[in-house]
Image (cartoon, rainbow, N blue to C red; front, side, top):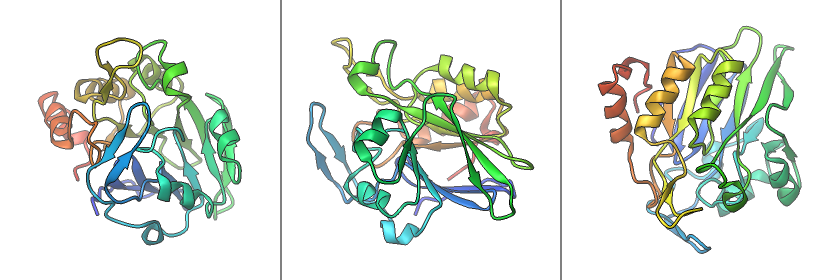
Length: 255
C-alpha cells in the first residue's frame, strides 16, 4: 500500500491508490472516491484504463463512517468494486445528481452546503461541499457534476479535499472562505478533448498544484490521484519535483 500520513494528531490520511484516500479525522473514519478493481479497461465515450491492480481490497479497508465521493460518473473515481463498497457505507456524500443516480445511502450536497457528522466525543465534524471544475470553463455539461469537500470541527484542522478540479479560481474561493491547514489535492494533469479538438486540462497539473498550495497556504499538502491509470500525463515524482523547485517541498507529505 502506498502510504502517507500527516503529523497532525487529529488528521491522518493514507493514499490507497488513485483518488482513494483513507482519512482519520476527529474520531471518524472517512474514505474518498473508492476504487478497488484490478487492472482493466472501462468502455465509454472516452475509455479509461486502469494499469495496475488495486493494492488492497474493499475488505482490507473495512468499515468507514462516510464516503466522500467527488463524482460517480467516471470509473477512475468510482469503479465496480467501489460501487459495491457504497452499499455497505452508512453515508455517501456526493453531488446532488450523483445521489439521485446512486440512491441508497447517498446524500447530495450543493456547493457550499454543509452537513454535521457526529463525533465519538459528542462534538461534530462539519463537511462543506465546495465547487469543483473538472475541466475548462463550459465543460460541466460534458464531464458532469463534481464537488470537493472541506472538513472542519472544534479543535480540528481545516482540511480541503479538492476532488477532480482543474480550476485555480475554485481553489481561490476555498481559500477566501476557509483558513486551510491541510490539503488533499487531486493532480495527475489529465488531458482529454472536452470542448475543443485539442486536449483540455481536466485536473490540476504540477504547476497548478503548486499554485493551489500557495493560495491555500496549507501547512501540509498530500497529493492523490496521480497513479494507477493510463490517462494521467504526470506522475507523483513530477509533482514532487515542482513543489521542491518552488521551495514548498517541506509542506508536501512524502509517500
